[in-house]
Image (cartoon, rainbow over all chains, first blue to last red; front, side):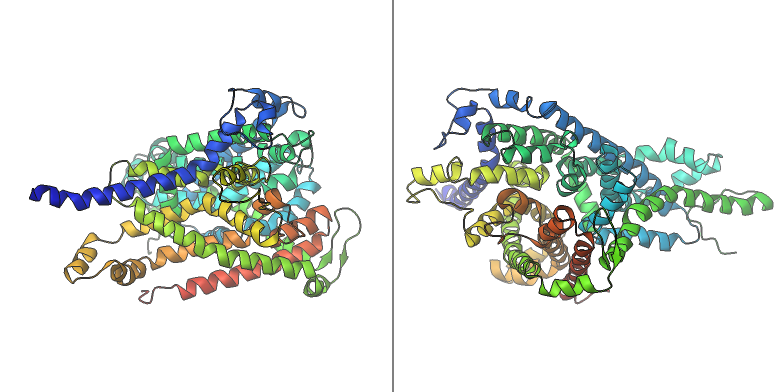
Length: 286
Length: 309
């Protein structure tokens, strides 16, 4: 009898907790679930007034329609976004790793000055430099160009990337490097052969942030891409939203949203640990 | 000579010993050179350019003219600039505590050691990775008075008499946009708070319980003081993000109704890339930057640890 009395408060607490959590979880999933449901309705039903809850028939019509909008349809814009994002990832990794290693493990005149210079960019919002970047890129004809946009994105990602890679390198025990240097390796081969493996988690984290931020980025893409063919996915979707292709096609819009969400969510779920480490390493340490 | 190298040099004969350190220095410099050059060209020079441009009348094509402080003086009489600043500030002041309190509640919940709690933590965080533009596209549909699902649900539950035009009047538009932004961003603050909370040793709470402390006392005397740094960081990030808002206003309301949701970055965007008054836009950017720096400094000062060593 007394056993039941002891267990009761715990049971109540657990039930309460789970109820609250489930309600909150439902609220958080609500927008995503409804968006996805709407994307699988037949096009006319997706735009119906009043809207329906569940699709009457499961249909890919909206997704197919997206492939016909503009020249090349959604594939083109997915390609644009993917291309820019991958370039950004590669560029950011290269510059952050080399720079992080240099700042972490070497001494040279002016190192502190240069490091402060690089660090100061952490405190400058990128919105402040959009105007001159536009002027600069226009001057070299890179403004309506996926490479140009990638350069801009790499710039945005570098402060965090360098900061994170430097911290990561500083955590590698010096003995490993010293042993390799003792054996006569050059600094570059030390980096390449030995350290890369050890700082890989940092590199993965930098890559994840670079990809997700570039894939989702909006205002810079809006400003720099003036040619519809060069629009990245988010910008393309805003043209769908503004009904540029006729009456606002809500089904197609949500289908586009689903397409846009999938890579980010997938990468996040697969590599959650690295993503969270990035938040901790980058943010809490500062 | 004092060794300033971070890595012990291998024993060498005298001649190559000296050049080894020099070699290291050169290598180090070369390693950081690409990054430094990149940051210099694409970050620092543009920053200086913004300042430079702000003193000019700078159309995209055509003649540029040096006009000194004219842009800044014009700002003082620019009604939309004042309105946008006011709106952005109001928005920030309201949404920041909203985000923080929600995040704090979620963080406390998510720290419970019950099976499956990780799933909930993930669910609360997922909106953070989907992008503000995409989030806005979802919400602009959800909130639509005719095809949006929110009105349908509220109508079916008889909670509203008729379909509401959430985006049609200024206070309502700002409120629902805030709701969408809280949904999208609260996960980030939540995770930061959880990390900070995890650093607080359980023994503190246990000792307090022995002394008979209740929940609020534990919160006030243990949790909040020890979370000060984390809270400061979370708040600074949140405030800066809110002051720089653009995506949600551009996508959901186009700055309307009647320019009431035209944030300051949106107004800068219009001036710079729609009207192509780039010098004017640059001046506004500088003013915004100064405001941000002052506010961040103020926040960090107010939230500094009293026992900072």
